[in-house]
Every structure is written in structure tokens, then in C-alpha cells.
Amino acid sequence: MAEQLATGWHSENSRPAFQIVPGAAQLRAQLREKRWDAVLHWLNHAGCAPPTSLKTLRDRNLDTPLILIADPADQRTAIKALSAGAHDVVFIDRLARLAPAVEREVREASHRADHRAALEMLHDSEARLRALTSNLPGLVFHLQRDVEGGYRFLYVGEGSLRLLGLKQHELRGTARRFFDAIHADDRARLVEALESSAYTGNALIWEGRLKNGISWIDMRSVPYRNDEGTVQWTGIATDISQSKQTEAELRESRAQLAALSSHLESAKEEERERIARDIHDELGSILVRLKIEATLLASKLSPDISPKARSIENLLDQAMGTASRVARQLRPGILKEFGLPAAIECQADDFAHSTGIPCKAQCDDGIELDSDTSLALFRIVQEALTNVAKHAHASLVVVRLRREHGNIALEIRDNGRGIAEHDMDKPRSFGLRGIRERIQSLNGGFHIATAEQGGALLMLKVPARRGDDLTLTEPEEALQQDLF
Image (cartoon, rainbow, N blue to C red):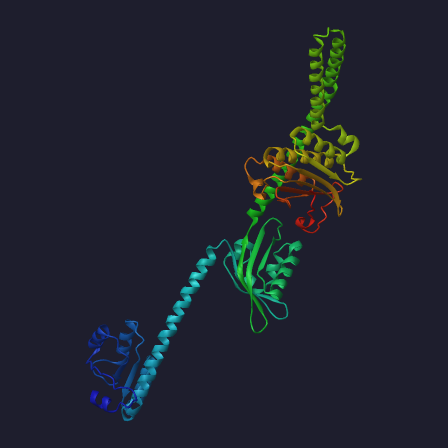
């Protein structure tokens, strides 16, 4: 039979090698030793029936084709064997079909093996995806927008129940369930964000509340537009309720700190006013009486003792000047009587007199502010001049107060060594930090820059009326003027 099969083999490929086995045991032994492309089974083989050969292949989980060689008279038996699982039958009088049949079945077996491998890879990939999406702290989604503007979820991760309280099939059934789960006030923003992302191709970045008004979600995805015009987003929606709660608590804490800071400033100003009043009323009156007594005493002393009395009078004059200056710094009466411009000019004169550094003050006429704003800006000028005296090593300081597009702008500049924005973050930078806190309490803006001739430039802006918003203008750098 083997010689007959080899003689009847007609193929463009090389002639195969045949191995004759007398029974099922020998077949099992051959299958264990090596891999065979096909098994040719003589239908009327006395030592092994077709079902036995098929069982042997299946027990070893082999997809090796089993092709029957049969006598034409055994056609009905061959058909039963085909029904049982044999792959093909070649009758002995048509052995020319053997080679094509074997080659075809070998190719089919190879295709089946490749298909099984692809399915296994697909199943492994799906299992990894499910494991990944189930462990992510959010909902993985694949959302599609068709050309008519309708939405449909192509994929929904297992996080849908945890995030939205909806099962996966509920979202895949209709995307409307997802939009209905969003808070009514935020739903329009979500649709707008999706439309904008679909139109521009920019990433979808949106956050909003769920229907309960407490939970927040954040959606992030990059859109993809296919040839049919549909847009798809594959991304993740995460629960950001905890971070939103933390932000709210932080804002509340900052508001409380700002209120506390404002209260402390008010208490400090009240204490300053009390001390200034005591200095002016009590200490001032005492010094005036001492001055009068010293003058009367000097007029009655002998000429050799009179110079000592005059020296005492001079010291009393200095003490009276110092008390007046300290009282003005604590609570300048000129601020209440004549307004902020006059108080700034007086402060500039006191600074120049006490430090020896020339200080010019330029203030627009007609600037009238409420008492709190005037006092805050005056304290800022005081603090800034104190910083100049301590750190700037400057030889000239200019203070400029002006109206600007509905705002009040205050500029303080010097020609010293300068200051950088990051100096605000120094642990003990309380002066600059206090200036920023005062400006923020007035709903204003604060900026530090380098002056034209070196040194530091502090630019502050507050609304002309308390409670208004700051009017935005061009960048501060474009507004700098050469005041030197």
C-alpha cells in the first residue's frame, strides 16, 4: 500500500516520507516521537478502525488531519467516518487526488492553528484589559459621536457601577443614561466640551458634579475622527469628590485665615490709634509743659548755668519732634484730615529725613478713597520704604500714586540691588507677604518687577471703589514710566 501511495502521489512539491504503523499502539508511539503533517488511514485496516485513530489524535489534543484511503465499494462506510470527524476521503482508484487533498488539509490545519493562537492572544488581551480596567480608580470608556450628533458607548469598564451607580449594559444600551447621571447645571457644559473636542480635535478635559450634587467626576480623553466622520473618545472618568472636598475645605480655611488676618490688622490699627493718641495727648502735653518750665527756668538762671538749660530745651525739642513723628507713623492724622496723597508725601519726607535717602512722591490730584483702602495703601508704602531702608542699598526712591482705568495704581521703585518674585516665598519674608495679603483683601493685584535703571519696582492696583472688581489693562511692564 505504501508503494502504491507513493507511486500515485502527484504534486509539484517534494515527495513526502511515509511511515507505516500496524496498529493504534504504534500510532500513539509515532505521534509521541515527532510531529506528523497528516495521518492516512486505510479504511479497512484490520488493526485500527477510523474512530480509534480519531480518538488517539483528540486525546493528544492534535489537529493533525485524518484522511481516509478507501475502496470505492466502501463509500457508505467512508461517509460515516467523515461524519465521525475524518477530514477527507480518497478512493483507491483516484489516488491523483491524494496529494492535493493532503496539502489542502495541512494548510487548513495550519490556518486553524493560527486562528486558535489569535483567539488565545485576544482572550489574554481582553483578560488583561478587564483586569486593568477593574483595578483603575475610575471608569474606562469608549464613546462614539456619530455624524448626526448622537452618542453611543462602544465600551464601558467595570467601574461604571462604582462611579455612576449604573451597570455596564445600561450605559452600552443608551448613552442618555450617562448624561442623565450628570447634574443638570453641569450637563450643558459636558455637551459643550464634547462638541468642542469633536470640532477642534483637542483633548476632552471636563469635570462636573453627578446628579446627587455631592460627587464629582473628571473626564479626560483624546478624540479620534475616522473616515466616516464619527468621532470617538477612549479615556477615563475618575472620582474627584475627595479632592473637591479638600479644595473646598482649603478655600474655607484660607477665607478664615484672611478674616483672621483682617481682624488682627483692625485690632492692630486700633491699638496703634490708642498709642498714638496717648503719645499725642498725654506725652505731648507733658513735653510741652516741660518745655515751658525749662524756658522759664532758663530765664531765671545765671549766665554760667543758662547754656545747660538751653541744652535741655533742645533735647526737649528733639523729644517733641520724635513723639510727633512716632505718632504720625502709628496713626497719621494727616491721612484722616487731608487724604492719602498728602499722607504719602509726608511719609516720603519723614523717610528722607530719617534715612538720608532722597524720596520723591508724585500723587495725582483728586484721589479720594474710603478709610480702609487709604489706610491699607499707606501701610503698604510704610512697609515698602522700610524694606528699602533695610535691604535695597538705594540712593533714590520714587513713590507714584495715580488713577488708571478705574483703578488706583501705586508704584514704589528704587535704584538699589533689586528684588525677585521668588523672594516672596522666603520663610521670613513677612513684609512682602503682608503687602500681598493687604492687596488681596482689597481685591487688587500685586506685581514685582525690575525698574528701568535697576533696583526694584513694586506695582499695586486696587479698585477705585471698595468692593468693585479690578479693571484689567495691558501688562504692567508696558505701563512703566521713567520717574527718575
